[in-house]
Image 1 (tube, rainbow, N blue to C red):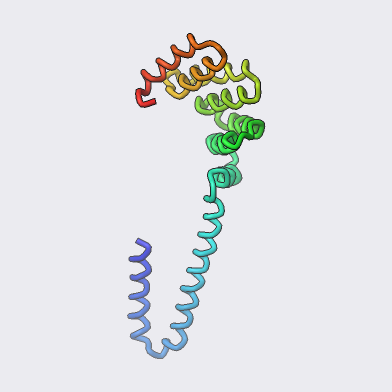
Image 2: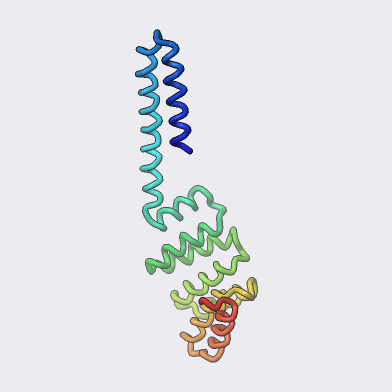
Length: 172
């Protein structure tokens, strides 16, 4: 569509200038300068976007800066920190997300994972249970809770949740 619009504008400009030969010496450089300014603006914009899209971390940081009330963005930014092993920072970001999305099951599961990594097992279990309370048919919630239960020597309970996860999402 962009190419069609640009081509249409170029044809229209060419026809218009062809009918006004006395304007040609002034208009051709002006049109060329305008085209260079527009192209330059796009180059700058593309460079800035590429800086933001360089990684998941830079993308989600940009999103939370521009949309600070977006709970899902805060959670995704927290996931980038958790992936780097920055658990305290991830927890802080998840708690920020909780302010804007207090009843988000995915967030509760991530809070369960990160609080467990920080050695807060009892709090972690509360987050897993809250996730399943909020969304009982959440396969990932059952799956991650099952993992947590097995890691905490409660495999019998874990198997039940794992079976539930597989029943809800056979491809899990």
